Image 1 (cartoon, one colour):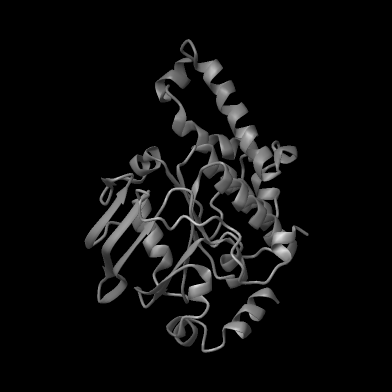
Image 2 (cartoon, one colour):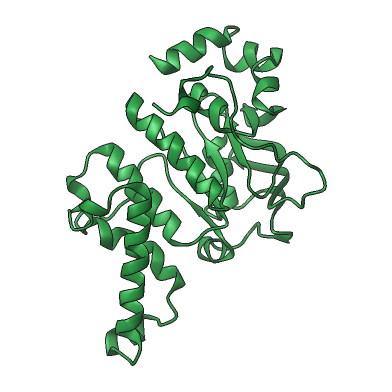
Length: 284
């Protein structure tokens, strides 16, 4: 086991990036979103700095995935501001946000199950393609070379997540944990500046979670900023530089792991008054 993973469950081994002199990569300011009479996100504000791993935690229904969907353009906020690299992006189409440098994974892996693993990752890489549908259909000059480059880049991402040996396997034949890795490779193939991971450890066993933690650190070390939604408290506390806690759509706490783990509001509202017990439950 990686020594960093065998340490105390609440030791953060990521670098500190809390300097206020650094320009935020992502800014969420007073964002609100409701569905009928239900307020899913209620005036949430936070910043993510370049090179950070930022955790986003809270009970089911706290608004975490809705917030992801707002950042990625799948939903539009009713109010508030979302900026990426200093540019407002609220209201942008998802493809435009992806081109700007934000990619994501989903709670349940969203793959083309009849396509092989490599083809699934190539789908993500096609965002970088210069030739459109017409060029592919007519096989215009340079199309074959670009397709080879896309295939090679996709294979490189499969090597990063450790699945290059399964490149020709149908995605639908893979177990759940490997499907998550295929989706992660596809997100990395877009060459994002920021990666949003929605419960990446859900459904994984202990060994798979350890490998995932190592992989997330490697991604961060490549210069990719991460925003992480996760219910596994041990994993979040080990990985995150800072954590935002949501409850009923509102932010109730924000800070480094050692602050969040001792915050009485977090303990009483989110963790039911017993942080140690909650951590043990996540690890069992």
